[in-house]
Image (cartoon, rainbow, N blue to C red; front, side, top):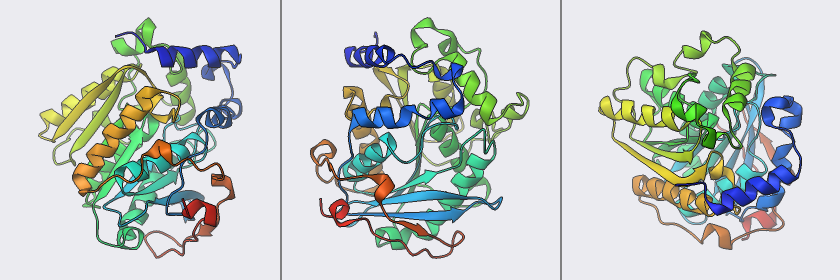
Length: 354
């Protein structure tokens, strides 16, 4: 089907602002879109508790994680890796709104990993940060959720790429055990020749030139991109990976490689459910409160998490907006090296009292 009316309207609104395409920008300029889109989405709902931690990276650097805890007894811990082409976006702005809504809709703790970005921190920094964040969350599951609950890895776009890599690495290294991998329009390969990459109707907010720009900053060497830690579709053995839910966007350069990965997992004997969000474009899953397709996609993902975790949703995520919420103002805690214990600080009272 054609791109839905809401997406067309959003594209027109963004075009009227006159911003250059990402591939014609510098990383610094491209990152300026985050606050603009966040203002359109509005603040996220309040949750029961918010805590931040600084975790050490393997190369001596550090990165943040944010822990969002819903009311009641969480039924799982979900480690979420955000999109942005490994170059833009972070756990603030739109992704904070999305994560709060997902925590409430799924009834689970969300651990948002703010892996470091290219080109300042090129491959494999994002992979190693994501792995350190996953190990930290696994070591602290009982502390975060109050019980030894299931662990889920999830991500969209470049974050979906990292989530797929984390699932492969967890299998190859003997843990942690993952109950589910949730991949929303993931980057799974470095091949720009697939039909969906070149279809004119897919050259929207994400286009082939934009993906080429992202790859150039993340991993400039085309040959190095073929390693499984960068292109998980190229892993020689996909057997024994955790069950997968793959959600694709119909109008997306990444559609074909996402579908190819779902089919490859299925061929390897992995339980897979793959759905296409018809009439949606790439990045719809971060467009909180802007696109009807976002709300539908969020509920699909939340439902899969609830099924694995045996959880119940809390208040409707769009009915609990918190005008006071500001991720930048929340207290930050400095955690020791994973997987040692951390000392989280709770959020300001207005964050927890919703």
